[in-house]
Length: 340
Image (tube, rainbow, N blue to C red):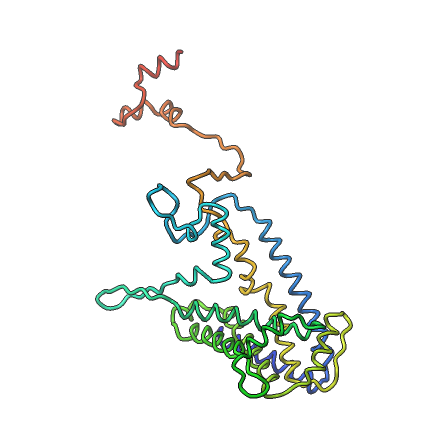
């Protein structure tokens, strides 16, 4: 159900943009209005989510750990899996954001006949996730050439490195191929592994289908259904300068691509994709595990009226003695203390 619904939603978006441009002539809506709506939703949604997370109080020490905590000097500590200081926690966050360290350490558990337990390193999931995110970043940087004039030098350098193995004209970008391959792997893995498919929801499939559609239409515009890049840059520069102009003759496939990108940006803050910002504000990641070093007290707890053991024994001493339970003070001793 989730797969069908998500795929149907993406197909509906493609058809809506195709018919809107081809039949209804809504070039300005899909070329200018939708990108502005998407960016407004993206920025507003991200700010709202970040502020909401930032206001959430975290008085307790709740980091998730995967290694030896700092204890005795002769026991080696896993500094970056179980950080005890803020500096170690910062290093852990850097490794998590840049290298997906927790995903790298992920292992697959499987029970087979015997019974035998097997653990398998999920290296392909880690590699596909890392490749997808870095290729996405490179593609975003490459697209800066449409929104800047003059184009920054690093954009040209990245384009040259990306198209190092030039095959034909226009040159084939390596990241385009890796991007499509990695996101397709993530989708296939979610489809063919029964346990993963069972827990998958429409909001898990929809971004994957949407990103595949974006990558496919982008490849079509570059390598097969050629579009006028000069007009595309004119449109992009108009958007960035808040003077939108939608030139004629760009091609319907470009508007489909732009519309899908707009949907992705608008959907981003309200979906699981927002983990990009959430990981930085997650107390299970960004806190040092120093619960043995300092006490974490909830600052807004109301004063608690405690009942000490001495008071408990004073109330129930006779019954405790009758039941044969040990007491700190016998009846005679307690009566003397009470008189004093």
